[in-house]
Amino acid sequence: MKPKLLIVELWGLGDLAIATPFLRAATEKFEVTLLAKPFAHDLQARLWPGVRVETFTAPWTAFKHKYYFWRWPVFEIGRLRRRLLETCFDIGLSARWDPRDHLLLKLFRAQDRLGFPRMHSEMFLTRPLARPEPQSHRYESWRVLAGALDLQLPPREKLFIPSAWDHKMILIHTGAAQAVRVWPLEHYKKLAARLRRGNFPVQVACDPDQREWWLQAGETEVATPHNVADLIALVDRAGAFIGNDSGPGHLAAICGVPTFTIFGPQLPEWFAPLHPASEWIEGKACPYKPCSDYCRFATPFCLRNLGEEEVFTRVGKFLAAQRPAAS
Image (cartoon, rainbow, N blue to C red; front, side, top):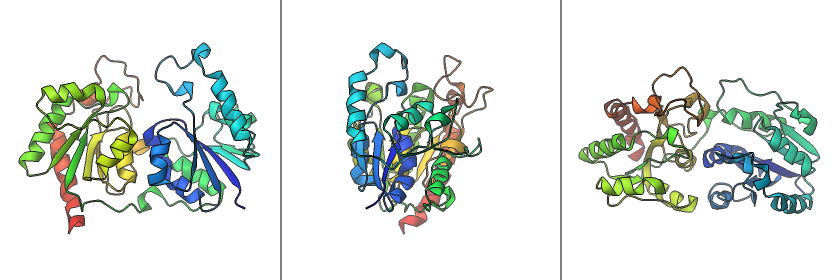
């Protein structure tokens, strides 16, 4: 029998996409259970069919009011703990230096607990690991964990993810989990128009709160995926993806679609999508970067001041580089 492995990744869609190479490698050696948000079920069949998914929306992953303890789902946490205790995990791990994850591994009684300690959370771990260098991509944390489990995980630049240029449609997704990561919609509108004038078929997609803006702007066929399954269906029709530093771009990349990412407050060296053909443009300089999802200004100038012409020039080069894959 394979040893039983519990993996805790409670955050966003992009985080699970980046974890995908590790999840796939782990199933070759372990019986893997992933504890993640409910949308992981939509990813499971497509990306890691050998993984069992347990769902939990951790209150501390909310953008606001995350420490209103009286709102925490105490009974749900208790039921989850009882359910996971039945599995008797041999190993548990988290790729985050997050004491809350490490406490969960202890509560779920994984015998061997791996993670990157912070704020003395090594008390919950049996094998505390040294974090990758601060400038490293998020994927490197999974590579360190893979090494600790004797799994083979290639460097990011050597990942093999085939490109999808047998489809010609360009998917432009203008949404993001937080507004501070959204390049202005009026810029996206101009970018889509210029690509269409260049005979590129373009599908615009957006978050539900952006839909009315696009309709008013004349984009009558704008797609508004309401869940990850809807988003995967759109991605599967695309040959290239253009969008913000957000989960949809990471999903597109791991599904085989080259991506062009418009970065704002975050750094590409940390969070660039994993597809080897993916490219990006950085937002304008700001003394507070990287500032995650909290901007000190009323408007994120790192994105607001990134002009449509500058982005279009880079996008044109990106698309030209993908075309040989279509032949």
